[in-house]
Image 1: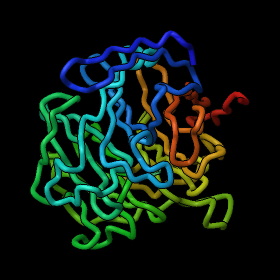
Image 2: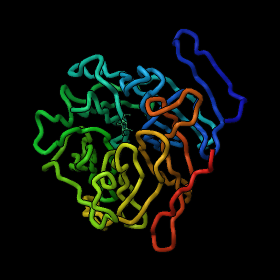
Image 3: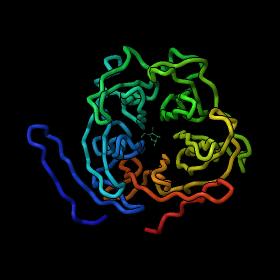
Image 4: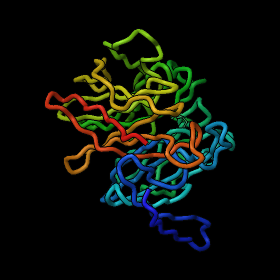
Amino acid sequence: MRTNIRTVLVAGLLSLSITVPAVAGEPISPRFNADPSPHYFKGRFYLYATDDASNSGKYWDSTSWRLYTSKDLKTWTDDGAFLDVKVFKWAKPDAKAWAPEAAARNGKYYFYAPIGGDKIGVAVADKPQGPYRDARTDALIDKARDANAGAEPIDPAVLIDDDGQAYLFFGTRVPKVVKLNKDMISTTGPIMDVVVTGYPSDDPKKKYGEAPFLHKRNGLYYFSFSTGWPGQIIYGTSTSPVGPFEYRGVILDYLKISTNHQAIIEHKGRSWLFYHDNLLPGGGSHRRSIAIEPLDYNADGSIREVVLKKK
Ligand code: FUB
């Protein structure tokens, strides 16, 4: 990481805003963070993340989410802990806050918050940075309440398709998808299993694990995910947003860390892969760091594997 870090103490807010120039493969922040959810809202990049600096160091047990913003993907400002699980009155105040997601619609911003490993809440705000308030009085997805929510409804990912239909993907070990209503805070229809065909191996450790993510390019839907613990980031494609997806290849190989979690965005004709890795001193499986790499496609629409520089 370059060393010219500018630190600004925001008086009265007890919030540390740190602006860091990041280059490919290097951490976007000197503070541990993970599970990137990057978005481009109204001329600025917003990166919502799990906070790995406030957890116990032994488990992913932080209880708030972090926000980083950038105008160019190079220089990132740490906008702090913008949301705590306590915003959701139905959640235990010490429930773990895991990989988040955000979406914009109806002039509002929606934040999808996996809480405690068994529920996904949704909060709403007038601005991407908040303040967010619970958009409902209960969870959007609840393992105990919803049929086929799966063993661990975590890792939400939202795609609003060109026809206006929004989809919420989530889940561990078996990927799930459910349609969202236009209000973005309620679902319609059943929770369905997402099918991936053509895996190169029958080994369950080389199939779906977690971190579902859907993006669309040239009319084709790309479903990427981590194979587990540790995780290789692989993907399949489909002409339907809900699959079945046919396995196409590896996006990012195993890292020396117990999890991986990716997101892909396209901006001004370039695609970018966000992921987390062990990149800072004192880092590890519970002290992760988000980084970014350019992502390229072949002429047939397949994704070129991202090969990280050796550290
Ligand atoms: O950060 C906690 C969990 O680790 C996330 O929910 C998973 O995607 C994995 O990255």
